[in-house]
Image (cartoon, rainbow, N blue to C red):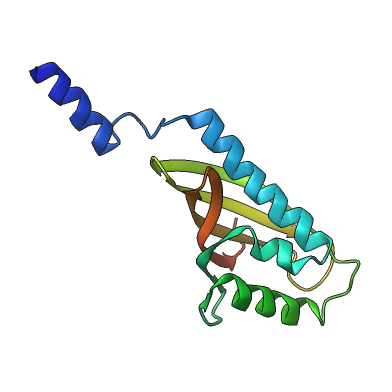
Length: 146
């Protein structure tokens, strides 16, 4: 009985290293990142917004916090309205840490093929809703200095 309680306590505390289904979780999170990249490059801001939870939010550098899919879509559309259509983003997942059964943190690096900002980094908190990983919060920062 004590052994069973200890196992349950370890699982609840995350002492297993966060491996709740690590490979499937990682694949789902990477699919979200890929969907974001594809939609951004197609200028499909509805597709970008769909990578967020309905109540998700984003802060880009020192800009305001934008909350909700529709507001995120509008912000992205406004941002890209002055961006050349030839500009592309390439996202690389640096790390994924599953911190709960339906919660994870992903760090990414974004690289751009043109423009004054060539690279930045982002940290996303993702939640699993209906079996799909969605961005609950994204914070974008300047590229890490060497």
